[in-house]
Length: 83
Length: 305
Image (cartoon, rainbow over all chains, first blue to last red):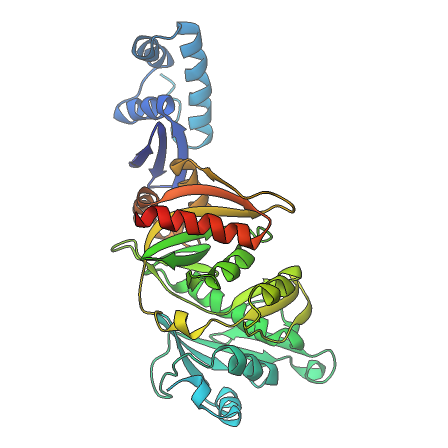
């Protein structure tokens, strides 16, 4: 997947080349998407990453990750890998 | 040579035969129509535009034909044909000139992919362009008509043509389409302004077109750099309110207002990003044109300092 980014303040706009779709993301979701483009990640990896980077509780981080992954999947930005 | 230098008979004759060639900003049009109101509208509103030679190349050939069969005599219709194909639903013949205007917009919006094209008015002052995207009913055209009669230069009332090379906006200045109460409002605001005949009962209500003053056309080849993106909204009785809007959200909204953002793909994203980067972005609510003139004047004055 090829993504192109624009950023102002803490807002990110991402353009996905294959679909031609453009999305507005906050900084946390932009970070998550960037990690997912780099390599497949588990939900618990993302949760741990956010917990450590943002110094939030693991419950809040897990909730943010679940919502973001669900939205990313709906927008066609990620897909679940069943191992 | 301009259209105004032709006699009315010559305009009618050209429209009925090989077509009338007009240069409008970066585009040339060949206009063909047997309908008298098309000739009348062109003579009233396009007299200062240059003609293109009869045998020269035209970017777009626009034909406004009469309906066929009994439609030639009863409940007459006007039909827009592009490359021999009817594009829109036919309209009553008294709407032929407004159909021509909408058809010219359609030609550019659907085909001019050398630009990133936005559905927006664009006006300029001191080299800086204000891009005003807005849905129908937001008061965009009224605001645009008011401001170009108070020191701002018109680049376009309908289409922002943005260069992918340097993100500048090319003028495509044509008559401003005003609807319903806006017609009388602008007549009172700019008493010297020239209007087309008012057409009743169109899909948009009463419509009249405002002629663009010669001083705007003299600069029609002069591009401008985007400096502001302003989303206007007419709210009855509202005090003027200019509020900063997030650049990221403005970019998404501009993308939605574009005719060819998806066609241009990554290039469209990059150009739009450059435009937003260079601009201050605002939402603007207003109810009185004088207030809008003052707010926009302050904005331009601040940028000039």
